[in-house]
Image (cartoon, rainbow, N blue to C red; front, side, top):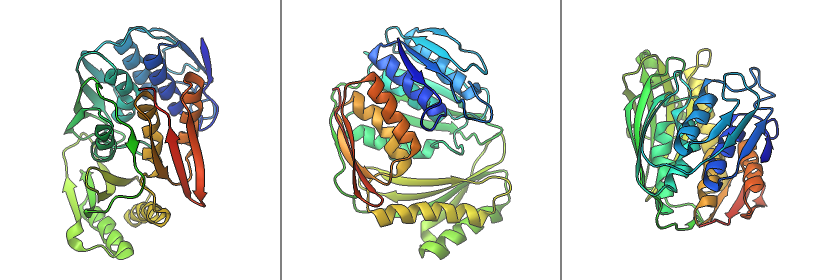
Length: 340
């Protein structure tokens, strides 16, 4: 049984999720120890437990340690089973992180699958459903994978209650991903999505974006949605021919609307200055699909701790080669040898 030290690298839930994904697709049993050991509340929280149990359902795994607060999980996978599944996190935990845990396995199933997921859809420290739909899934489509996502109800922290449906087709033809240089920007927009909040918050965020980026007013819009609780997220979107670059910041109590916008703009400026194709969070999320697919190349900014942790787990499970090459101060090329 392969043993993964869950306290290494970024030391959070990413190590657990990547280990579960790779255990399912490789069939290798895994023991994850010291899960989230460095966090304020170590061990499995509700959203991490939801990932373990979803993975167990999809491959009929034998699991030891799947309880709240557990610091060690043993996961012995069985065959991947396509089907219709419903997973409820029961909190505002990220449905997108749950999806990314089980998606690699479902892509390798022999038949289509459908998912209904309930929980958080727009969370801090996690990709939103918009990010996944506009940025992540279009690149998977370029790699030959067919996945569709439909958001039914928004879910913000702490109320949660979001709902979405996902359709996954078997990955028949795997194509390498080649992002050699930034694609031209066809159009750009700043979007504030909010629920149960005063309208001036969105307007202040958009006004700050316009002032800092010199974006035209018609590029900026706000949308009010229905949700179980209040929430706010600012999304800067650069639309290319087949996908979008998405930079997000979630509003929180105690952080001024102008600061939320300034943080988003700082990330946008960093990406533009580097002249790379893939922003740092997407770079991390692409690794496992590239490994189980036909591989590929892209450029990104300095690798995040999440990417480096993902890289370590992938190397423990797989003989696939992944190389990182620094080309400039904040420009790195990533080359992945896929299994397909």
